[in-house]
Amino acid sequence: MSGNQETSSLPSGITFVGGGNMARSLIAGLTRAGVPTSSIEVVEPQVALRQTLQQEHGVRTASAIASAALDGQVVVLAVKPQVMAAVCAELAPRLAAGTLIVSIAAGITLAALRDWVGTGAVLVRAMPNTPALLGAGMTGLYADAEVGSADRQAAQAILAGAGQTRWIDEEALMDAVTAVSGSGPAYVFALAEAMEDAARAQGLPDEAARQMVVQTILGAARMLAEGGQSAGALRQAVTSPNGTTQAALETLADGGFHELVGNAVAAAAQRGRELAGAG
Ligand SMILES: NC(=O)c1ccc[n+]([C@@H]2O[C@H](COP(=O)([O-])OP(=O)(O)OC[C@H]3O[C@@H](n4cnc5c(N)ncnc54)[C@H](OP(=O)(O)O)[C@@H]3O)[C@@H](O)[C@H]2O)c1
Image (cartoon, rainbow, N blue to C red):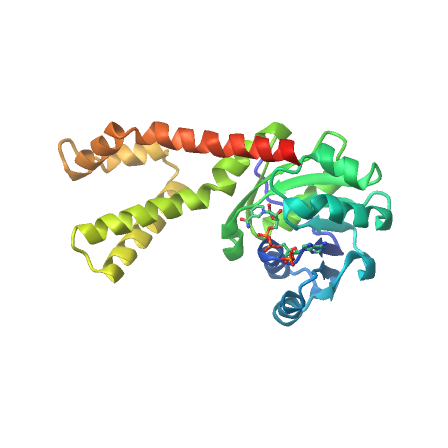
């Protein structure tokens, strides 16, 4: 696996099919990275979203694949998994041979995409997460051995504007990526909710509870990201023998915290496999 960032390989023309939350995050990253807005086209059926895309990002828009220019080297599929088969059926006859298709749909396998778009396109799967909205996302990428380095770099460059990227060696591991980084922000939000409730239960006012929890998570995340120490080493460093932190961590251990997180991630990965099977 590799985590190299690559922004120098940005393609000169990109069509997004689907102009929802994730597409807008990626477009914001692309424009921050200097991609001219005239080279980005978005196919989006909702008129209000098309207006937002034009006003906030200055990109070209189309209401349907049939009326899209599709003049770029890359198509990013950013629609919900449920509509992906229908979108690909519409797209397939309009694709030039060798077009790079990057799918960000959860659980849609390369085999399914290949069935739907035919053999002419080059396919890459990507799994971003919602912090992409702030340019702080984490994306897992997968392509099979037939995909060359120029296409890999182009796909990675599109996602790199929205945060960090990492290639995954086996497609089956995309379910693990979905379970860890795709769904992961929700686990942190659940922890924040529980800590805020606990803070209030200890008598802290609402605003103080929120500020203390948010800044604690932010500060701890920065120590993890910037300090170079493992999570375990950082935990030990703040746990004095018989102190307050030890009392809390023992309570978490007694409640099976570590195993519970493991089971939660396993359940998410299993759900991903089921959804892929259903696709
Ligand atoms: N949000 C996340 O955290 C996240 C993380 C990783 C991956 N993803 C994946 O990213 C994809 C997009 O997610 P999202 O959160 O951006 O969803 P979203 O906000 O619902 O955006 C999808 C957009 O595509 C539009 N659309 C539907 N049919 C279309 C068609 N035939 N042609 C063009 N556009 C069409 C939808 O319009 P209507 O609403 O009118 O249908 C909607 O505006 C999903 O496959 C999801 O699995 C999301």
